[in-house]
Image (cartoon, rainbow, N blue to C red; front, side):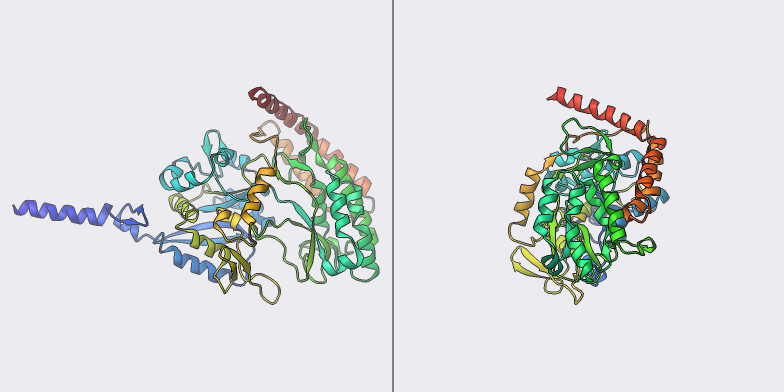
Amino acid sequence: MKRWIIAGILCLLAGAGIWSLCVNGRRVREEDEVQEEVTLKWMIYGEKHKETDRVFALFNKELQNYLPGVSVEFELVEKDDYKEKWDMKMATNERLDLAWFGNEVLNYTEEVKKGSLMALDYLLEANGAALWQQIPQALWQRERRDGNIYGIPVPGPLYRQNYVVVANKMLMERFGDMDEIVRVNQENRHTNRECFAVFEDFLRQAKENNAIGTGVSYESMCRLADKGYEGIYGADSPFVISVFDKNLTVCNKYALDSWRSCFETMAQWYRLGYIREDVMNLLDPDSEDGKLKGSILFLDTCEESGTQADQTHTEYEAVRGELDGYRYISYDGCRNSLVIPKSALYPQQAMELVSLLSTQEGQELYRLLANGVEKQHYIKIEDSVIARMSDNDQSYLYEVAPGAIGNVFQNYETHSGEFEEIRRYNEEAILSPLDGFNLDTRMIALELAKVDLVVKKYREELCRGTSGDWEALYEDFLDEMKEAGSDKIIEEIQEQVDSFRREKEEQG
């Protein structure tokens, strides 16, 4: 009898101490694992603000109520530096448990081929059932490569970011015509000389009145030349198709009129003094964007009702003009995704965290991470609409782009009807005719690398406009691209694109 009693007590203790614990519906495996301290390393794009460290600490404190023992070490990286930072981490196999992945910065398919990303199918089944149910299957399919899923799509804007030109409202009203600038650019599907010339009356008058500041932000303004094109093998690829070309003709974008017009314009603007004389000495060409006496004009990404955090803030009242006039969904993966890199140490906890932030249970935690604390970093205008608070420099006290941390629709709106507007834009956006296309680069990998080196050699100087003979430099640029194999690359990509199009037509 005593033996049965002792055996029963031991069974009860074992059951209570080892397998029966549940935390917020999540079964904990072993008692010693409950006490294990797990620190996830999460890299996201964004800018550090005055209250960033404080909010991150508050987030980790609140996270203990949902995932005890789990904390997050955030690494904020500005979008322009994100690819370089990512490549370095992958090359050195530096530990990274979770990361933002955007198809306007990184090539999703190529990173899968390189083995940079962990396949998520098992983790989704074991720890991400809520994510799988919540996110539309069409988005999951865009993340599938060779039968596996490597990225968690972020519901929100699916279309790529459009560009806007930004100027001081007072100066534009005095010297320029933003409506005319927008009209000319939107009427021309691809950038031509006219698209640049429409700025010049404004620039001339601003210079004559000593209001030119530090001149045109040449590096950002050159992005206007990409209007109407989609890059193949990455957003910054020299090889593109026109968004409006049904034949899907592959081109070297630098040989097109849009980029020739850009280089010609920058050379002229430098001679006229619209680009600062000491431009060659600048380490950060965009550093004067948004400053009161800084760039007279610069190109920025179009803000989608507060769904991003990388829009440049200005020290003045700004006027912004959208230059595309349409929305477009690129072919390679989703615009925003979350990935678990190959070097992750805690993939299970990373998946649990992403899943938590996507649920109703974790919505307040998500909103804390995205916006900070109510009445300290934002105020509520309505139940679901907020306005962010700024410091004396007109910079937000705190924010993180919702698209970099998970489902945008978990957040507050920044104006009533914002989310309905995003959903409508998603439905109206032009879907790339290359949707589902995967480029095989094995036959052209060497040539792609050589062409990239040529671009690095010439592009910057041509964009600055500082060459005494831009036309000769431009011809050298094109010649060296051909020597590096640009024609072979175009031929190979075109063959694959044509094959993809035929298969798609056969399938109906």
